[in-house]
Figure 1 (cartoon, rainbow, N blue to C red):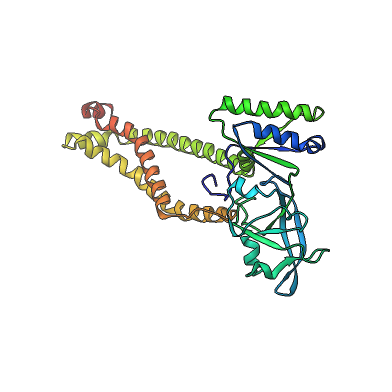
Figure 2 (figure 1 turned 90 degrees about the horizontal axis):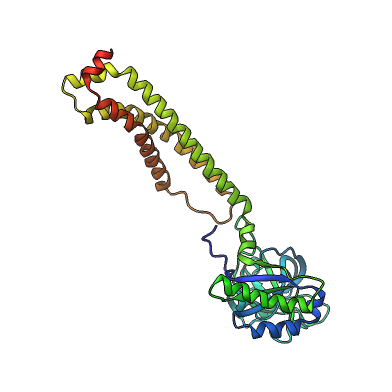
Length: 342
């Protein structure tokens, strides 16, 4: 999930909710934003890109046929696509008249799902004839969690501003980043003294979509660590028990010429045999459990054979490292002492 390309830029972007005071003085705020060199660009949208709850259903015409479509609707200002690096695969985007004409930009999923071949043949039905035309197609982006596939989305034009303001800041370091936000906050508080400025980082809001997954990752890590630790303790106790029972056997073998490596191999192979048997039993169970868990995601990794092979090798290595110390002590012990104890 962390490595997946969502299809839009989210680094060094902060966003704010616009209140009525700011909305009425939006030109003054824009002038301040334009005067700050660290602010690369800004744009607006109706809702937060990664938390849009606007779901619409509208009647469309395509090649003369009428049908209803449902989609996620997001109103944006014309530079929204350039700001987030969202590519338009067809069309030129919104212009100065797009808001009045209720122009639309579809995502690729809408086009495929409703078989819109020629943009000029399709439009949304509105009260004014000629409005609701489709002026472009944008590449699909993951504006929702990767648990679900990209669904139909349509962008509409907000005009010059809307309810959410995004700033792209290139400050170089955290100190300059903070100073840049302080400059914005000073202007904000002058224009809206009753509503203090609150900002959020877009990348953090994106990660918040996976809060449960990150929590599950931590739980899995700690339970795995505890399981391995308990297994190692069990192996140490079992090894000690076996060494005590085979003290005489080890002494007799050494008196008859067995060297340390042979004794070590003899003692370790029984433990490694059971680890190998456990691996054979656990592998299909683990594959099935992981396969079912990955069904919760629309975008998922492949369960390659080397993942299970690596797990088996690590399990053998941990078991071998755990028992080898005591086995080596038993193998290097003076056989005379061992036989005298017996």
